Amino acid sequence: MRIAVLALGAAAGALLAWLLLRTASGRRRVAMLALVLVVALGAGLGALLSLTFGPEGGSGSTFATPVPDAGGRVAAARVAAATPTRAAAATTPGLPTPPAAGATPAPAKPPAAQPTGTPATPSPAASPAPLRFTVAVAASGLEVPWGLVFAPDGRAFVSERPGRIRVLAGGQLQPAPWAVLPVAHVGEGGLLGLALHPQFPAEPYLYAYYTYRAPDGRLLNRVVRLRAEGSRGGAAQTLLDDIPGAAIHDGGGLAFGPDGKLYVGTGDAAQRSVAPRPDSVAGKVLRINADGSVPADNPFVGSPVYSLGHRNVQGFAWDAQGRLYATEHGPSGEDGRCCRDEVNLIVPGGNYGWPTHAGIARDPRFRDPVVESGMDTWAPSGAAFWRGSLFVAALRGVHLRRLAFGPDGQTVVANEALLLDRYGRLRAVAAGPDGALWVGTSNRDGRGRPAPDDDRLLRLVPGS
Image 1 (cartoon, rainbow, N blue to C red):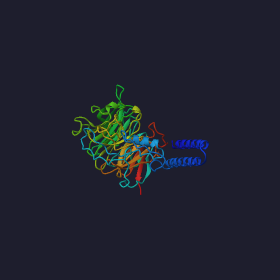
Image 2: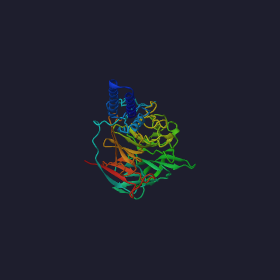
Image 3: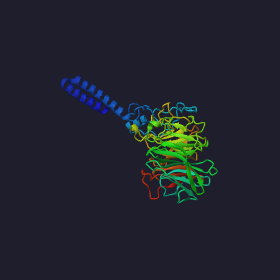
Image 4: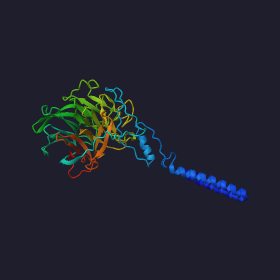
């Protein structure tokens, strides 16, 4: 625009000078020409300076002020797209969770104000030291390992989605399955999460979450427990049944908390409307006793529902203070929405917003995630705390995400992707009794590019 104005001014000046040359004479002609020359030079110099230094003494590019939208992130992305010379904003904010309507605990202290439209970024002063480790393959030739738990004697129990429970003992994958369950291995369904009783082997029970086909043809999920009988598992006892299932969004997270209760992550089974309904167990975090009964202190009397408004919960992890974090898949096309995978800090009775919102929405009716993926897709699954950080396996993101939080459990002080595209899709994560972090690949699930020895169990061994 300024170049056009400069050119137009020069043309007008030239035309005026030509007219003066034709109509004026003598001293008058010389004076008029000098005046025209001074005006033209001044206008040209002003335009040139404006082009060079910008409107406020900065570079020539102008930047729109970000306008916050529902999440405070889309606006930032739009600004970055409109001004390519400016560095793109970070894609993963770590913002504290606003209070949910009806949530039992008191709301956390609000964070310090962030710049408009800019995600919160880790504090360099509070960031933990860089993590150093080596990776070794502990087992190979598995078929879609999903759940991974360790017994006190060092044995690892691994679920394979087609229905087998395998055991790794003495560094060797046992050839015969510990148990085989009658699963419906359809789409994302099959044998999913595993959990060991907290008093194992005194209470010799292994718990499993799996998809099955009901006599009427419906896909459902259930939670069972199997009694350890020597080197094999005994008959399965059903503890929780009729969890809605589908070829997608079956959830599958399963873990005992420090309170001795069993936590179950379910999906919305592609029926979004059930996620916020307390009368449905789909799209929830459920909490039951080890025998399958409902704890008396659950937020909804007589119901296993612990939190609601979830899309697809796959991983659980507790920090040293006993706070529960859960991983959740964001939308992949519903109503044109994408991405925004979540790590949530779970509180009893909390509503996490699905399907009204995905990601950070700052809607006081719901609880926001402590971390979301923005317009990137992680497809987070297994999770575990190890060496002070939360590690989350990413399926589509093909990495292991490391998150570290401040004392409030919500402020993100470290956020990085490890093993990016080195081992493909990652799903299972568990801290082993050997001091290593164990991670399972998921490259044979129909969405990966399996290597000849997939799927594998990896050991991340801390190093100097």
